[in-house]
Each structure stands twice: as structure tokens, then as C-alpha cells.
Length: 133
Image 1: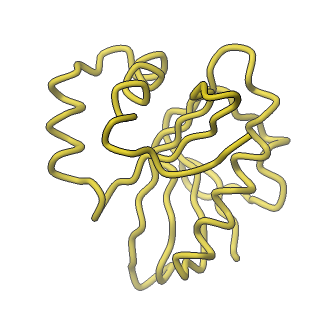
Image 2: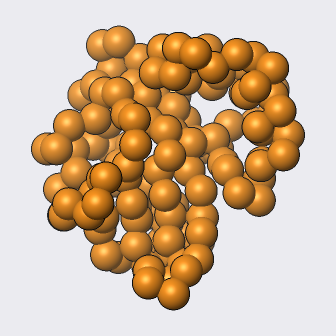
């Protein structure tokens, strides 16, 4: 299993997996969003198993007065049958947040393939869950 940021060439398979969560998302919308937001404000991260993208997570690194520097998991979708890898992806995202000097990680919004059991150490916050690092 491999966890990493998707390369520009891998964004098409990221888009395909993301549309199983965000069915209204068009290719043009995704391309425009990535063009304007990547890599400064939005980073696509994936879990690969045997060369197949099985989990897609779109993350943002932000900073504010309340939380300081923090990572937000904006999108999280696991391919059908790969939900068992979600906890490991969450653990990777926690390490990714630490690597980028974040003090907190937030998981919120629309997600698929992640359960409360995968979010050990997180607590409820507004429309999602937060973990202090």
C-alpha cells in the first residue's frame, strides 16, 4: 500500500473516484478548481494498492486565529470494497498534517468510506471532527 499526493497525470483517476462522492461534479469544474487551487490551497492525496487508486482525499492547509495552522480534509472517498483501508489513510493524513507543521486536523463535509471508528482520537466539532496534534 502506498500513500502520496497525486501527480498531475493521476488527477484523472482522482476525479473519477471523486465523482462517486460528488456525482454532480463535471470534469470541467474539477479541472478549473484544480487549476486555481492546486497546490497552494488544495492537494489531492491518494491510497494506492497494487497500482490502483482506492482512496482519494482532497486536503487543504489553512491558518486562522482559532486553530492556528491546520489541515482540513475536504473530500474523502474510498472505492467500493476498500473501506478497510480508511483508518490507515486517516493515520497517514495525521502524519501528513504533522509534516506540514499543522496543529490540528479537521474532517468535515461530505465523505464516503470513512467511519467514526476510523477517526480515533478525533472529537466532534461543528460539522465534522477535529484532532489536536
